[in-house]
Length: 260
Length: 260
Image 1 (cartoon, chains in turn green, orange):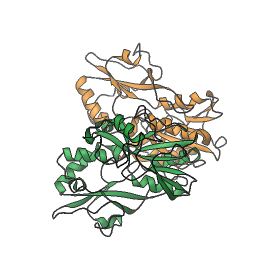
Image 2 (cartoon, one colour):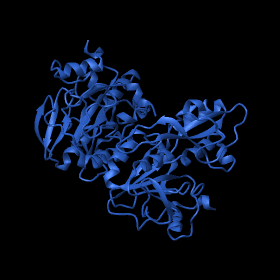
Image 3 (cartoon, helix red, strand yellow):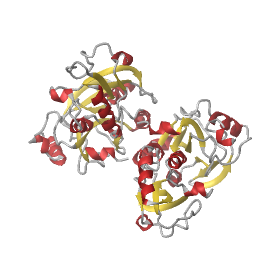
Image 4 (cartoon, one colour):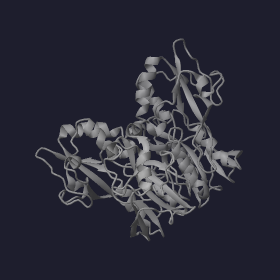
């Protein structure tokens, strides 16, 4: 049962090439993270971008230049322990690879940022429907008309995820996710998509459309894809990120994210 | 009535030299902040120190190199709008001054960090005694035996403030301050001072001792003085901080700090 795999065992399977597919639903109850790697020269301004935009870019761990073992995963190696990476040159996608040991340098700084997988499990536990899980789809994501607070060369529009639910369930979802400020926290908006500049909920910019039932309203959370757009906005010589859905799985338990 | 002075008016009075004393109790309801200024070269690692130690060093605002107007105070100038500054060379206190325009350079980066003034007002409003306010003293501060997570050249022991109260009041205080994660959040410890390496509550390392009544326990919060010890631990050519009690007063209202 892959959902019961330990994070350490999963990382070992990924490193040895046994596991090459997305990490969705694996090692349930453990925090999965977005990865961004970039050169030391740009690290201050990217860290500042995350600090200034904590909802889309909640910081779980930032490693010193050249370091590969995060505090939240003992024995892990960020160069090998994700199933798939994306490599960007001058902000353009160059290739997808399964190992970045040849690209990682002494001055590379790695950022691990929270993702919404953690709070989705809590929503389900609280009786809130998570339609993308019910329909076995990727969550719907939209580029909004809101700009993040820029930092140095980094800028991006706010990207959001959307989950449809009844108003009563939205109240409960707000209560539950408020505790998860390290995985995007409370929603950024609910109701009218137009206010975010979204013309058609049926045509997300990333992910899949999901069914919206009568009496349901869309509820919008800040999304980690924002950090990928920000990182690649700067035309740096080299940026490495995880490939969509191929996340880093840490030893941190979801409930630890609620500790203040 | 100085407690009703607007933050903008107070900053104007400070800039013109009319106000030169501590900011305690002034412009009530508005967030006051710790200030640290240091060279661009060290800014990534100091920002990372704050990110890694969010309880003692909660980030309110970080300015781009050479910038002096924070987002949380329109029209302000961080070089002139604090009543007193401390100047450190190679980690040693060199002088206290009322203006740092001559010392501030194009590559100077300013950090504004949350302080406990904000949650003290909320504690009082919630019926929790704040002994240092009752006795018109500085809060008791202690250097603990716990090390912060270091970053590059920056390291420091955790410094805490202590407020004595009954166990029932401690429960309420934990509830209230949990919401204030940008001003140190929930306590780091309660009860036995020995566990933090504190031998005598009557002899704080900074601030004044306060009365502890029968049936009261000490409750400990992370303290912003930690950031000063960290900044001056690095032997940098120049560090500027606020002088104790002479804080930066922002336009942000205390209740805004609870928004997630």
